[in-house]
Length: 437
Image (cartoon, rainbow, N blue to C red; front, side):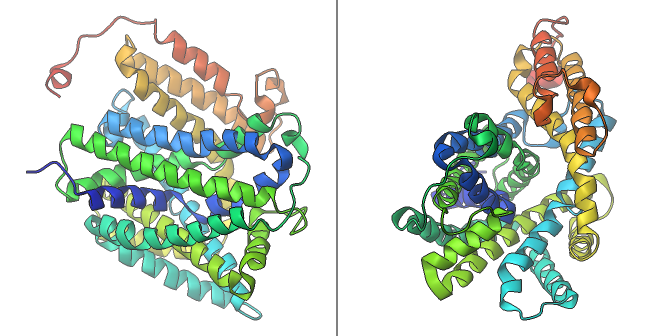
């Protein structure tokens, strides 16, 4: 069987991954960061790109190197611990948080402005329609590349390109003075803000989904899978960088358009209406709807694929279960779920970063099992301190930790243990499986 793809299919794979990453949160967040950074927007943007684009790119490549599955990525961890970690990631990023948020943001930014006196029933109806469409596209798992990569994503990219060109050619406002931490440390602040996008979790999910899509195209060889997954990651990262740079510039040049905004959605909405006049809301609605829909499709499909592998319930049955759950959560208790989810995310995100980092150094680690278990445990323990802080628990006793004030107190301890593991333990003999892989 041929292990090669046509150029159009390769580009479609990259576009599909780009669309999965680009949710509404990714679109409305950079404008606010750009406005607050002001004159220091360039340095802040570099920091932001390192974590909002660099980390997801590295994560996808790590998945490719590991073999394209969660099992291969976590083979040096106890199986039960790896499974629990995966379940938590898929639940939080899937039906409990990210997917319902995609539907809710799509309603708030793309639909609600056109409804006079919008009510709860309008949101309910939209949620049902939105996730019905998402389930429809996720239903035929093997056709995701064709549907999203060849049709939905190009439409999204065209509308974003129109916005980006207009922003650079016709800036609508002036550049403001930097505010807050952007005054003295714009690079670090931008780096930390990009970390908060949580796209590394998404990369763990979407990378495996891309592998499944490649297999449906006949690509099963490990070398070929790694090659195409890496190409897809580079295409997706380039697209994300293009969007973030234009939206950062939009925010930086929003002085006089809107100031002291609570969120980037307000900045984006008013800026787009100035650019395109009465049709501005229609342009914005198209962008947000496509971005939210493609992300929701990816999340529903990835979660269904994962949970079907753990249970006797089929993939299509999980599509229905998760789709209905998402539509329900988008209507009831989302705010409460967000308040619960954020500390969990802070506890798990460093673990994901540590897992990805270990993948690149596994061949140089004398004792992979000892290293993985030690590093993951340390990252989790210190990340739980950061999570407790986010949840409002008094953990000031740990204030001595570097970067504690930025909720990144896990970074130095995890780094030190990781370095130590390069020199600890005897080199184990390769197993027969490793030798014949």
